[in-house]
Length: 534
Image 1 (cartoon, rainbow, N blue to C red):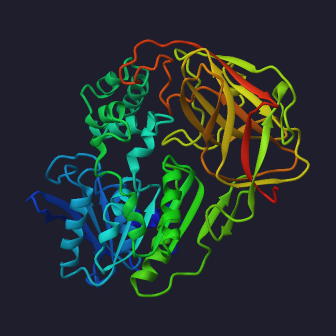
Image 2: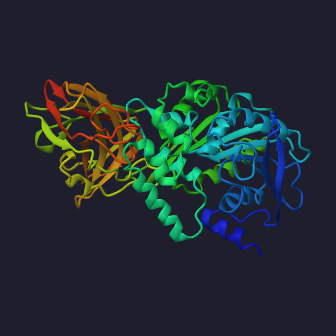
Image 3: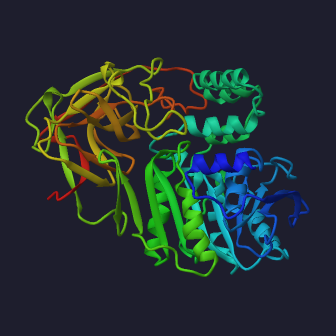
């Protein structure tokens, strides 16, 4: 009996394996060109494992426990052998872990070592999510002929740079990731909960440059880099692999989530592959970064295994999307899908939202207080994200809402969502956060997608263009469409101190009085890609 094998089969909802009798070779030594040695574990069927198609996983998160079961045992029971390597400076591998900076050279050296091993065979598939997917893009333009497919999940080719957008500094995700990689694994539930509370409290630290010490007791270089270097800084040289994406000559199947922190970049990478004429497909489900079903495993066992065997994978449309609201999958030929055209829904006086032009009206006003920042509720977050009830959030005085009348027919929105908000602040520096919500027949408001832009010169009336997360959503007949406007979503985004001082060093927090305009000369609107819109 192999209880862990049966448990994995049930949890991942998989068919019974070809074998449950697998072996693990621990701590295989891989020398890098600078003589640093990286360690790896090889999983294979006890009988006939040599020469099988090889799954290669490169990870900073260890090789054992759940990682070993899902990424090692499960494929090794179903037609593969698997090699899980700990990247430099992690879990026994030599050198120092300097996030994302060594993955190009180490990845190429690893591939060169792997294909020379007598047990490797003729086929390799690159697999993994998040950091494990990023390392695939780092080598995508120089793959040896043995590599037959890539399956990068919940990831993109310029991983950290999405956090550093000039129009809004992400805080929670890079901070939490940096802290988690600096802290030892908690032993016991109580210690784990204590660590979690300490991390959450640390995000309130002023200045933010001390938050890493508050959370871990030590300086964390990655967090300091996030806070002090913008996306154009030389500090990030070598981390951006976007230019390698079109050169990926092997078929690529990407799996993402509507509430994943890396979704915009993942879609960008897919579009680059399609534009280059590459064999690419994209699957997006109703998932957050930390909440994913068995789709990547199924992609490996169908798409990946077929290509590794020299066969055609099962036919399907290039783009498969889970349409929320309808709660069903749909197939499309491309992203954005054809047939969906932009429809403007204008903010109106009295909290209304409609496709009609706004009438003359006074602006709506609210006060943003960074000492009591508008909280993040759901959305694209590594933890605590997804679809959440926003009803309580919308009672706050620093959140404006605009809502349609009850829909007399279904409205399907699929594609890129944006907003144009005519805005003025009492401070030169302010943020505009816009969120699209679905209000059901009971009045419950659930978030669909959102985005934030940071403004300078905000004390002068201007049109703020906000890029929201992409989505696929069906607003049902009897529901209403709602738009929230506020000035933050903390701690997903760093709170705007209102002073223009860098978040890393700001110690003074200033309240700001905000105005949102909606009149014929200043028609604030959300732009939704709707099926059949004109």
